[in-house]
Image (cartoon, rainbow, N blue to C red):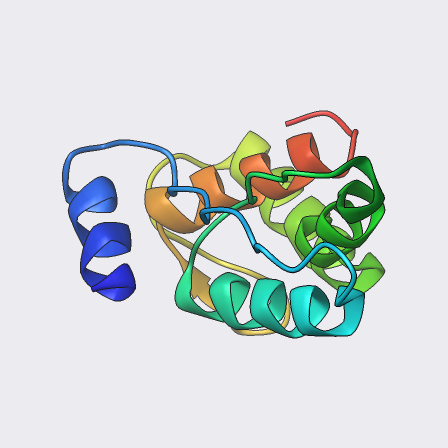
Length: 112
């Protein structure tokens, strides 16, 4: 069901949905694992019911340095070409990939 929600949001042109709360406020490792699973499914963020959960959630959904670097390469290439394009490393990207790269940079606190 979660995967269907992600696909439906994408099809409707909406941002990725967020996860619901993790009810055990003491189980931060369980929260971390659950967030990682949700992120792999395409969910983006999570509701929290206790302040101690916030740092775990933020770390789980914040882009990694590698993701930021890849997004910067995509966005830089998109500045010079419109539509589908090939990156210097041979990857082929389209408008959807560019939009995702911009979202990654926004999440990382960089330009989008």
